[in-house]
Amino acid sequence: MHARVPTPTIRIALVGDYDPQITAHQAIPLALDRAAADIGIRVDYQWLATQALTHAEQLEGFDGIWCVPGSPYLNIHGTLLAIRMAREQQRPFLGTCGGFQHAVLEYARNVLGWADAEHGEIAPDAERVLLTPLSCALVEAHEQIRLQAGSRIARAYGTQDIEEGYRCRYGVNPDFAGPLLSGALRPSGHDQAGDLRAVELDGHPFFIATLFQPERAALQGCTPPLTTALLTACLEART
Image 1 (cartoon, rainbow, N blue to C red):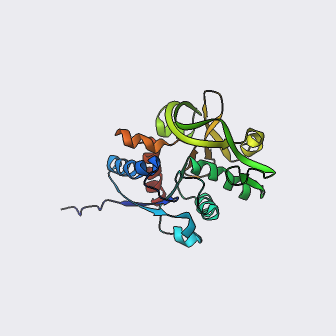
Image 2: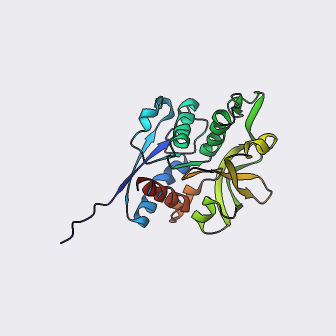
Image 3: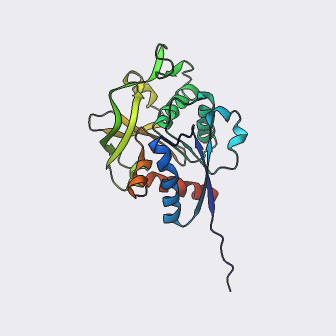
């Protein structure tokens, strides 16, 4: 008889301040459970409140990091710490909504050296406001999005044309988009007006951030492709 191979368990850190009233927070456990079942693994997820997140060691032992919606976070420094760790340690990372905004902010500060980069939700009068109010707030809205051909996110969806839901008021300031996206951080999704809706990081096994909330699909009984892609990347990182 062959020994039974144990089912792998993937551990995901959910970085954000859990609130059961937030639709995305209701959806994320369902999304992870559905994706795990689809690929035949177990998933163990843990919510990490940003206020308590003060040291990188608190993120040890997790296969992947998901920076979840819910901005403004109670502790922006804990949020940026988690994103920086995922980026520098090549840990699979997904950022949605507020996670997208802070992934962009972390990259600007720590890779581009823009120490004065700020989020307009927190510091609207700063000299370099990297995240500014959207021309039209996307609160409980849906949009058509065009994904970049050959991008990791397009491969995850299996198509370049998708429709996703939002609850968001801030996006990348167009004044800084050119230099922000001229290096390793690449634009990988735009709306029909050409506004940035997704980015990914070259040279990283899996680092994707979306302004939209793909996890919401789980509330409609569908498995979000990016959740499956995140868990798959975590599995691949173990081999």
